[in-house]
Image 1 (cartoon, rainbow, N blue to C red):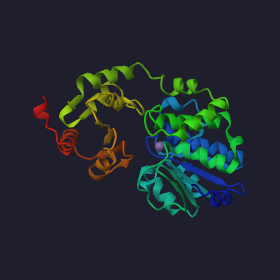
Image 2: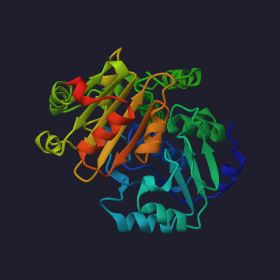
Image 3: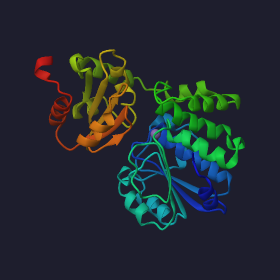
Image 4: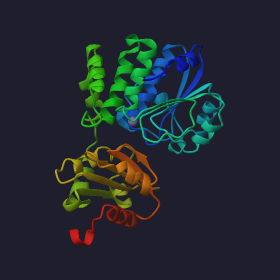
Length: 333
Ligand SMILES: [Mn+2]
């Protein structure tokens, strides 16, 4: 399944290692980066974790989260770290535009690059590639990598906590992309003493009051349902970002409310963020939102969960999306 010999060889003497993940880091991005980093530190390597943009506050409890370098906040330090790296791990992304200008630095680095990722259509920039959309999450892949190389002894509490976070968030709390393998891993974590309820509290049940206010606003004022096409959408205007003081992570999970409806098989959340319009899409069953996001919105991801962006206005983006889905707002209202 995974050939670990080459990777083991690269790790046979202490190195300066940089671990990177994607912009707008989610639980899997930060979980896989930190999980891999803890393991590498245990082998005596010097690690630096880098994220292009800040992570949501509900991941701050992770050990060494505060040591992660954020490119938006300290670009020079991040670039220096990449330049002096002897080995680079690219976690939970497979195209260099997901790490902005750092991508150029990574491409220019002579250090071997290792990709660990579960998205479709990987770009060929890495020397060692672990890429398989059959995995629930990159964190699940990290579990196989590190236990494959070091046995189950490498599963310290801190490793299990961050990998569990990645698996839990990328499966929508075990609602999708689950497998026998996923539940076996979680069972092993539990047997080894992982307090999974604590992680759920820390990550899921720690929203500020404004989260429900924003959710209420989305449900009551910003939702369009097109049952004839099994399509539902929500959107957030620039004004919403101001009046609800929406920050990184605040819109997390909102799209799942659309997917709770029996008449919705494809859901979209269109966000007019201060600098760009972002799109999140979800689908049920065989419908691929990955295709829609890739073909029309410069993005991609997974069959049932994808994202993209738009450089047009919010109105134009919504119009385009309705057209793609074959729905007409004037009929709906
Ligand atoms: Mn992931």
